[in-house]
Length: 501
Image 1 (cartoon, rainbow, N blue to C red):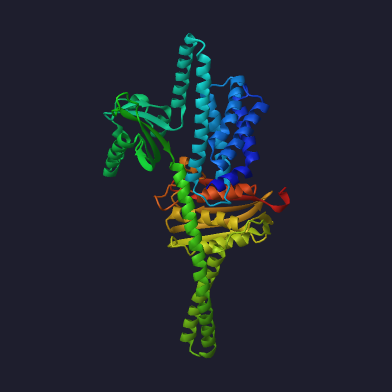
Image 2 (cartoon, one colour):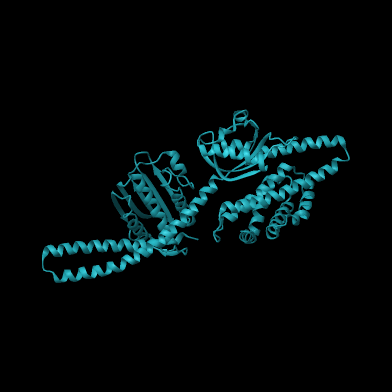
């Protein structure tokens, strides 16, 4: 894992530095010059690489001294420094998540990066406090003022954190609740203070046992971390979370309560599920291709024998039945060929093509879907459309996704129309269904990742989002029009070859 992260950081060091610098200047241009922002971002990413490589946080000591002097010079406070490190964290994670050249668990990567940055910031906090205390030793009155200011800074950090931070006393009553908790769970501080901690527990016996385990383990060990569990929000949603629990300090060593830090990783978990599903589909595709090849050889033999029998028989009835058998063999062969073509690893090279062939292939694949019951496909395809410069496999995926969406909309019974024509600078493909249609709110979100109106397990919410991204990559567009109960029209516009840069 360290080697993968190190390789990725080195690979994107320039991009991360530039992105981090830009974000600092966007938020703190009044305090940092471009040179200062770049110096901080560059030194920070380099020390992060050094710590990952050596696993020695002591290597960061000189770096911390240097940035302490920089922060003193530009006049930023602890809250702003925390936000500077958070900005860098997001700059790093964005590039790590986008890189698909390594197979890794995104959750572990995020946790590894978070831990290193938090440790470096914690060491900076110690350095900051030591420097402050040394300065305050010369002035007792200034000491009280500085302590108050630092307390205010820490309070601001507490309440502005994206993580939910809460304090629960020994009677299981909430006595502190930050803005991060409000954001994740929906309850305001006024709604929660004085309430039982079980307010966040889903109604299942296992969560009650989990709470008992947390109480006992914190009393015994002084710390507990749950890497994956669930909690319930104000509006009844289950969110996947991680918990870090610490006992409250006590002078006599007795248990007086606990502080809890909760992080929401629902979206990361969804991403991991999509990765797992993609891997399973890839295996199924390879298996399907192998089965298809095995079916193809016997079919060829059967087809040859049927043709021999057709030539030798004189009876009309027998010839008619043999003809029906031959037609069905050809139909199975066509399905097998399309299955093999669709399961073949996709190409990423652009080709100059006539889009009609891709549309016909997509229709051929979808016609044999199990959702097709009494579906009538009506096509009006212009055979002389202008040429396009696209990746055929990716455009095929777009049409298959839209057609499958149409099948769901008509619930296997209805009409799907496919029209193609050219207009000015574009080739236009319309896919029209007479299904259930969509309201305005659904249409506004239909191309968002993970958005789906289907039941759990019946849709990932990624098909149309991926299709939208593919078409935009080829400088095209997808627009949708629909009315509830009146069906939907998806219009795909792709620029013709002469109008591409």
